[in-house]
Image 1 (spheres, rainbow, N blue to C red):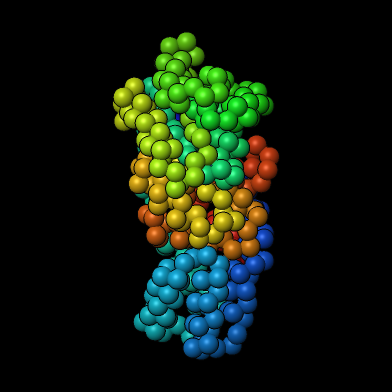
Image 2: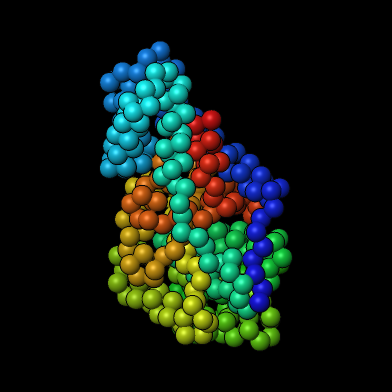
Length: 315
């Protein structure tokens, strides 16, 4: 019966401020150069060509960039837009439109236990993101437990335990090499019985998406969740590194096929001068960005807001 409360305006404002602060490098990079295009005095063919080239370089992807510019040109013609600054305003609206219709998260629905499964490749920032996610929901009044189902590396279990201590969250773990499905089963039982938790966040091994057997094991963990808790996992989030650009798209496609990914946690957004990968994820994969990592500290984490993001990259 424990539902997830909607954020207050103050919480939303804090999230938006974190997001915009993390976009300094992106704002000064390719999107900054896009901004300078609209300092011209007239709308020319060169402006459209340069805009398309910069959008591609900013990691939107070729198809998304071309379609966006085509729509923008058609809109300028239809609305008889003459001033370059009005084209810039229209571009912002079109960019927001690319992100504005995400599939709603089912995490908000009231239930006794909500299960979140977190996946991602090695080095993407997955374990740190799990800790930030736990901190985020704990501060909103949730009773959180972490499951250390990355049993392939002893260091991964230790790392999660350390983060659990830092954030004041219990971690359910077994010995290195244990069956990840068994860890998840124990964690679910602990949430339902002794620990009385209402949110379980499951860490999984940082799998290379090309490893067939490892992906199959991830599917098994997904199945254990489904058997033990109705409609679980209620959210399956894939952690992607924003600095990897278009490589993140191919990673996401494999994970989406294996475990029915429902959303993205985008890490290291503060470390990229591009940032267009956000649009590519939504357009090419049909997956919403749920959260973004905005720095290295536990609190450097925010729910993703399309309008705040676009305002952050274009100013």
